[in-house]
Structures are given as C-alpha cells and as structure tokens.
Image 1 (cartoon, rainbow, N blue to C red):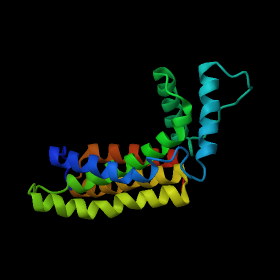
Image 2: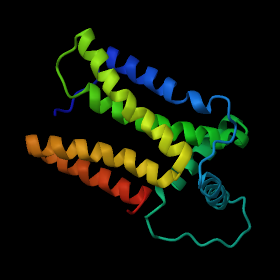
Image 3: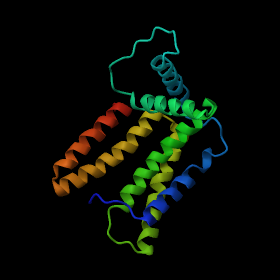
Image 4: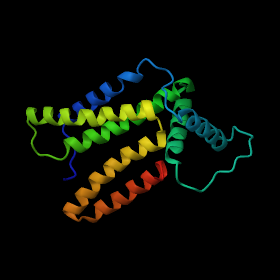
Length: 190
C-alpha cells in the first residue's frame, strides 16, 4: 500500500458511507452506548475544572490510558459552549463522531490502496468497505464502549500503516505508527 490523497470519487463515497452509517442515530437523542454517560460526566467535570468553573477539589491523574476520549469530549464541550449549542446534543454528537471516525478510516484505507480509478473499481471497493463500516455501528450500538471502539478504529489504521511501512521502509511510516499506537493506548490500553 502507498500513502495517497483520495480523489473526489473516494471522498464522495466516504461521505455517503458516513451518512448511511449515521442513519440509526438520526432520530435518537441519547444513543444506547454502555459507558457514554460515564465518559460525558467525567469529561464535563474535567472541562469545568480546566475552565475554572468547578469548585470541586479534583486531581487529574497522569495515567494516559483511557484518556483520549475524555480529551476529545472536552474539546467538543468547549466547541459547543463557544457556539452556543446545548449540551443535550452531546451524546448524539459523540456517538456520531465515533462512527464517522471509523467510517472515514475504513473508506480512506479502501480508496487509497489502488491506482484503478474506474467506476467498477469504485463500486467494488464501496461494496467491500460497507460491511466494515456498518460493523462499527453494531459495535457502538450493542457493545458501546467508547474507548474500545475508538481504539479499534485507530488500530485498524495502525495495521494499514504497518503494512505500508513494511513495504516501503520509510522512516515517516514508523513515526506515524508510533503516534497511532500511542493514540490506541490512550483510547483503550488493551
């Protein structure tokens, strides 16, 4: 595999896959993710502490495991607050972002690995990418562990980067792989 920027067809398919995979949460305000409430609560407390709003005596641990989703949710809370959007939509946005990240990674892998840019090739890759993208919906909806599903998405990309590094041997690949594996550990230390 080579690192390549996707073309417009690939980007359109990725957007389409994301739209299809988000259908189950379009009409649900609070997705049924197992640990979503806990992650949002911890992230909200962390955001209040960092923003200076909270008077609670919180101690922030230096342990990096399980922290990536909290950091991302804190950034999301800050963005929603800055835009004046109610935090009632936070669970839906978090679930949608989790699904979108996975689908974008799957689509990127499927559409940057081949130089064949014919319509037939694009349809074949879309057909192959669709089950892998929809599988994350099942994982989020029924298993629902935010850190674990985020780690699986990043690990999928890390496996692809490992294969590319082994094929090319470029130093850039090992640096990207190290960053991705650090992010996997921060999302969920398996």
